[in-house]
Length: 249
Image (tube, rainbow, N blue to C red; front, side, top):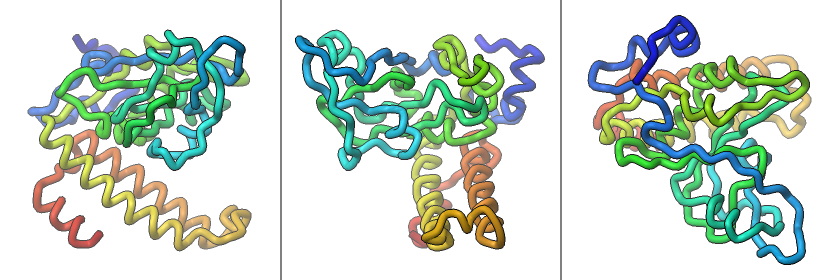
């Protein structure tokens, strides 16, 4: 059940304007949320594993076999509990700044022996009503993550509790519409990222001033706005939109 109190409305202003056929619910209504406690140590008597760590998630929108995962060890119970699976979403559960928290990465293939490391939360769709892709796109919206930012606790480093993540409010479109949104955003953001890559100089320090910096800010802002509009229903994605974005891919 959703609590329509002042705090909820303040942190999720988009919630009052989702399409009538969409549902507003807590994240843990449709997905499991698991906080990892697997550290980077290798201990005698434990089984060898590869760890998907904080940096792997923070720097990659998608978790694939191309990432060089850290080698470590873990107990069998940890391996069973934290083995990542295709369509899992991993998010960073702490950060030096509250506005840089809950950064997501989607697992796009099966990775046997790779487990979720410390400082990460694993979100696994439990219901057919939601896709892992859609959960990941939601978490790429800075406006959606505002509810995490407001509830992060700390002084020099900020962290999220399991309750905060599990109770996050999510808009839930019908499954078919989610899939259209997923495909549209994947292709649209890929095109935006391609343009951004062309605009990025070899010397990253040049981004701190001048026209290139302005262009990058505009692209990042547009990308975030596009994602947010799509995942909250402000922009509805039709089959015609999918055909158009495919034609320009």
